[in-house]
Image (cartoon, rainbow over the protein chains, first blue to last red):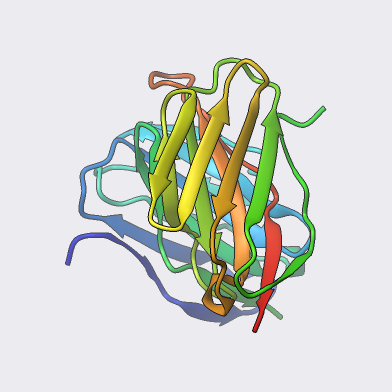
Length: 110
Length: 113
């Protein structure tokens, strides 16, 4: 199916564990983004990528790592999860001017 | 000053009303303008996309861009309860290494039957 998919949809993890959130798009869009959304803060950019092997920090990158070895995949890793990383995470892909979002991953760190 | 400002509301209107949602921005490099609708516990869904100043209409929705004033609007005619959602404006620069996609914080809209 064409589109952008995130997995898992829901995740509960313990403090200190490493967690990877997956994002896959089928359009071959150059740009991909990771956002977190928290009440009162709106969408905050964590990392973005302009192409395979090109990534850059966004507004709130601390504690996160990304990679983009293939155009269609853009995984986000929490190296050592903290409670403050409990959030809803959205991946998006974009051609110029139009960005499309996945359904989100709801992550709870206990 | 934030690059994109959007009144968070909340905004509550009766069914059938015309709704006006607005954003202002400060970055002259923004070239593309978008409106997203986000239902509770769902991902943002692209509603409207415009490139230049002027109006763009799609059914009950009209997007308006005024680059000279750095002001964009979304109008919803004959609003329905199903329009109840958070509406986010977004803007992006042209491509290249400095590509930037920036969102407003969203306006929560409730349409009452």
